[in-house]
Length: 516
Image (tube, rainbow, N blue to C red; front, side):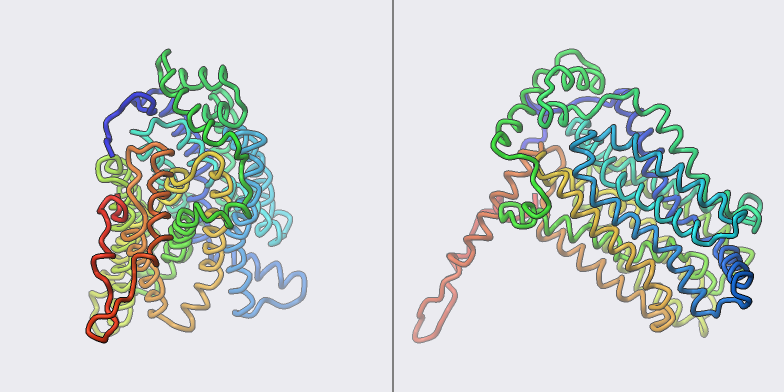
């Protein structure tokens, strides 16, 4: 496919409005996801002590170790449960209120959650912490789908990968911010953990204040609302040029192809055989993103380093070091995606994570006899985080936008988002118990998943760099046609009394089945 810009294809340069709306939505939404993933790591001991003291005041005795672990696991994983709930209404919200409007409205959820968590200690209510975490999860469940959808629809195709990975950098920045603020010199001491949990209101307030000055997605305005004037003005704002007829014509072409197709439901998406490979691909990369073990690393970094034999006073600073590296890795992915493409970043990322997961198992098993193995554990944790932030952190959300046309995209985000969050919840809740029962060998589960996802992407998902949404749809349509007719190619013939495959019938063109 010719990657050069041509008439009718949305190409352009990076304008200030494009960069500003990308940074603002990533800061006010995506960063909160990363922050809330890591914020429960450093104050774990203080939160557990608060739960135990409150329980003792209420019932006259403290919690046993098993019950305390269960309550803290619920506090950690309820964030993902909220994300799962938040992912369900995404299709309805973005259709009714638009992409921009949904992001603005969801900010109020953060204010409610922040108020609950900030006042939980004063009101002696662990339930307020758990409910607050759930509500922040709902917010992230909405925004984790809407931000890449919004950016994917406003970005020129030659910048879609770059802008699409900016939210993943802010996810890494959110994790890093939580690690820095969790240092003992800042908000890591016992009196400050409620404030530490509720800092999320600051980015949400800035987004609420500024995002309404930016236009709605022009694709949404034209294709779904048939608002040609609004779409034209939005394109002129984002692309920084007056003549946008080429882009309008591209959108009209997609609108005509969807004239008889309304926005499809989740059920229609799941039963539509014409997009089954896209749906399966979205399911694999979104589940693989969470089942790779990255959440186990982020939720329980301090515990992992403690098990690796790192001295307690050094653990917070080691954790901050990993956060700085993940930001650098995210920047590398962002600035190389338009050169390398989506496939190499996600394949290399998952493969490298798998190797590092195996390395953690080896180092933890050998550290009793080989003292320097503790440093191998730290290196493997850094490797997992770096591999994740270079590709798997952002590419799945970007690909979910790219693999579907406008009519299928909202439902695709519901499917991908719900599977993503369900996997997130599973890892966050199960990992402490898995670690207790399997020890160091629990990381081999994550190793296998990472390698399988890398293989799936290598063999099934085509490259989407510099292609329009219609072109990507046609690639999958041709692939669907090939796979559906494959049984007709494989024929048994008699050869000297034996069954043999007719090899010539298995030949097909490179363009039909090889990854683009």
